[in-house]
Length: 255
Image 1 (cartoon, rainbow, N blue to C red):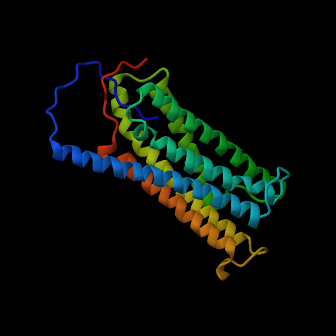
Image 2: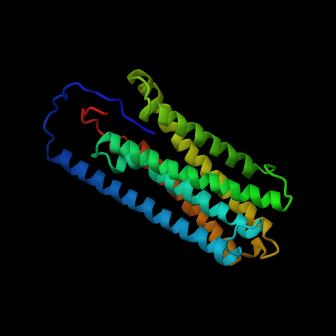
Image 3: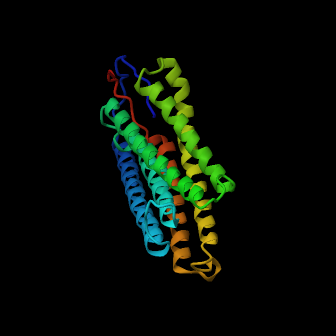
């Protein structure tokens, strides 16, 4: 959970920007909002594609240990680790003019919801494997995925303790903030690797339904989904690391 360090000092006087400065700022914010809209459109596309793939081409959903139970796994992982997590990452940029504590709650809330979906997604895949006596955690996809989830959990706990309650000291938060932002983007990148490798693995394992190399509809949907997921992460990463989009401290006291 990102946080800028509280500063109760008086605002530093700044010079009045000229017309060119306003023009540049207007251009930057136009691009910014276009990028935010792009993230939301890509998120909707990714969600629709993963639902079409699992519902129409992989048999739908159930909670009975069958392949239909497995189908919850990709849906919930994309929704949690990519869509909700990505939107949580840019919340400090999108709501930069809102009270800081309010944004902290939005950021933490989105991540908590993402964590719930991720846990259910893991239960679905482990339940499917155990019911069908398939070994767990044998593939590279599963190793990367589990590492991503564990890092996400650690990031959430440290962020909660550091920025919400009981909160680190100002100097500790200043030190940890950069690491928190870096690992936040790194976790999103790892989630993309896990999702793309998982999609490829699932397409290869679905040989009884179709031959992946023959460009079936399901394979094309999975490939497009992988591109959408990757584009979300790239766009979110750019928004987070562009210094002109960073929230400007407004010298407010945080409760």
